[in-house]
Image (cartoon, rainbow, N blue to C red; front, side):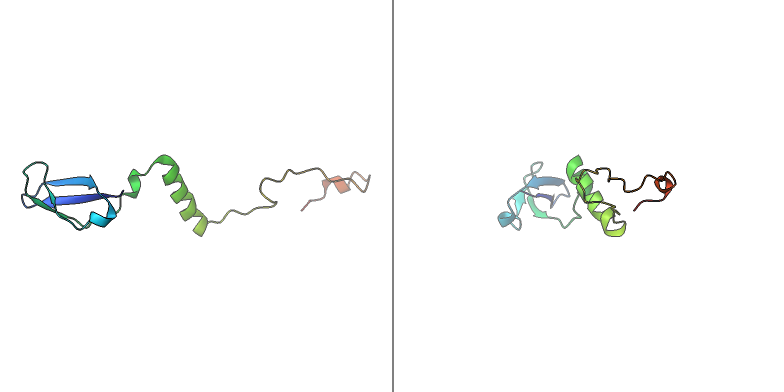
Length: 95
């Protein structure tokens, strides 16, 4: 259930976790008992768990700075068979 912010008629603010189907219903303030309405507020993405926060950061970073790969991820690199015995060929750049 999402967490919503509420403000009563006496300007007390508090948060409640309520089902989405009842989000527009007024609640009673836990301090004074007055009627409270839901406030429109920004999502608190900074309070996510560490795994969820890392996922959002990596997703946002990959949109602007995609990782460059030189092989299939998870594939083991096996040394290729040498077709030449010339030692000068060993110093040539490989793809």
